[in-house]
Length: 214
Image (cartoon, rainbow, N blue to C red):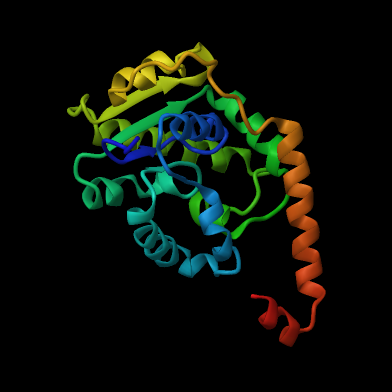
């Protein structure tokens, strides 16, 4: 089934982005996420903005839906680049959000996080992360405040993220399956550990060998 329009999830990470992506896939969308940006993790934070925008533009024609870091911070550009797109903002209470972020990322620095939040890791920088999270949500709501046909705001902690709301907004029939749940804390910890080990191995490889494996 061909997608009717592009869909952008503009909620920050840890707001059910993985589950939203699975739901959109079940509705027939080809979904891009954080995975398509992993190659930018060696980019310096000062160069991260242009690198993110360039990579995003390369991906637009290959996917129907976009969610998770760093797609949300591009909401203004995506609104310009993709006329007629639908935007979905999922939020949650800030205290629950930051607890989830700290649980997942801890003190592990990430250059993309540094670009987005101003600091690389949430542990010890909770206030900076929450400020950016709340500012982003307010900016998105302000940007789309007069466009209810293009924008849907749902609250995760209030049980608003469900098939009925998403399908009504996107014009799809409601599928007769449970709402998908993905990216549990246990799964995320395993993935983070695997990525950390991979990065350590890569750093210890000789420069010529790193280049041959790129």
